[in-house]
Image (cartoon, rainbow, N blue to C red; front, top):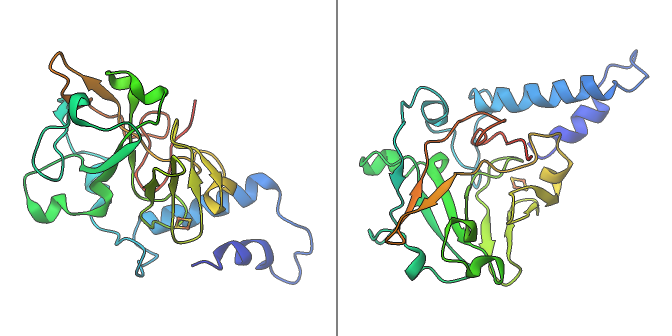
Length: 214
Ligand code: FES
């Protein structure tokens, strides 16, 4: 799969000497991505499996806000979450351990480094899909660099808005160059909630595909 980009740029027939116009190349890339999302491209370790992404992306019927639960079963709270740290969360949670283990439900809840992360409100936090929009590896948060880094081909995402700033994901056409994110809210007790998402590129993004950064 890593050679897809090369094929795109050099795979035209001998009779087609001229390079495709940008709009055409973009459509071809989009087709490949959509084909992958449709399961045409099979997943290979360490890339995450196709899973049930489609059930999350549409028709999930999730309309209520949901309290964020951490891996240890506790409620995520601004009062117990260190500045410049992250934890994996599941969204949307179903209560079914098999479904909730799907990579397409994995997000990282990040508390930004200081000074942005000092406020005890939702502005200090971000939650991004862990699926890299390049070829679906799981990225990790590096607190030493305050960056989200993908181990497969080196894409780096900006923590403030999830935009890819280095690596192959950064060279993809928007909205295929930014991570889907969740909107968050903090209540009076300091508990963190996820607001009902709009799974579209104009809204919260499409997991595995991207989001339009405004
Ligand atoms: Fe290629 Fe993330 S899967 S950089």
